[in-house]
Length: 320
Ligand code: UDP
Ligand code: MG
View 1: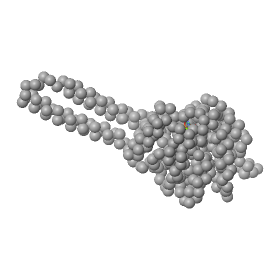
View 2: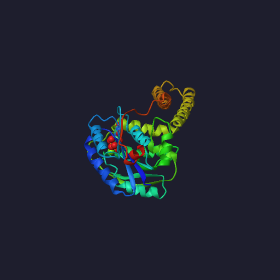
View 3: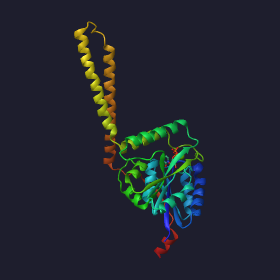
View 4: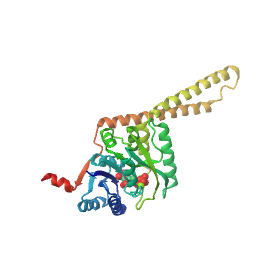
């Protein structure tokens, strides 16, 4: 029996690139012998004609499967939907904008055949992205790695191949704030990486504006670390320590000198500092509580409006 590899491609307003992406995916997968490929496009509530284009492709090609959301739920839910619907012995996650070269899939499959359960792509360099994006991504991965309880590979996105074993574990994790690259690290098994040069987006612009980037970054840190909570304890101790020193200092000033009226400025600074530390700590607490709240509501991660899968030839014969 031939093995099947599912390729999951999240798409949000990708009308400008989608024709090229479908063409390249088909070409690359047809060039890899001895495997069946299932191309799973997840339309994440696009407002343009991404959906109708994909619908057409799914009619033309037996192995193109389209899942369409009822609205925009975000990149990680889109990827999760694809992973959940996948049937392959291995699943590849790849962006729709051709920033992650599909040509690497062949190499990933070879490493998988050598016994690796996860093969992830590490970016050697990134072309055509703003300096702000480069710097913030670089620092984000380093801070995340420092804070996280499991090591999360640096400069690594969701572009990866995962064995069915890993995929089943991932699907069994019920959390709503999904930070997939971290969850895969947490799952473990035999993981390895291949480095690649990240291309410029083929067309269109990034679907990750600053706001989405920040909430994604926050998800990464808060889902994989409770160190921010400890941080507020540490800053609490430090500021109380400073306050204690100040206390002795004022007593000394009052008893040993006659300049004791002055000092309101330092009072104000100390008050503002402590107030700031308290607000930050409450904010951190609030973020974790908000997460408990949203997990406890237990709403579905996404809502599927359409699920179009052409029956495969061998499936049809099963029905007779
Ligand atoms: N994406 C999505 N939903 C969103 C935002 C992005 O499905 O709400 C998809 C997008 O279509 C692309 C992938 O996620 O296939 C990565 O997004 P993008 O290329 O815009 O991010 P960047 O590469 O700029 O970080
Ligand atoms: Mg991109």
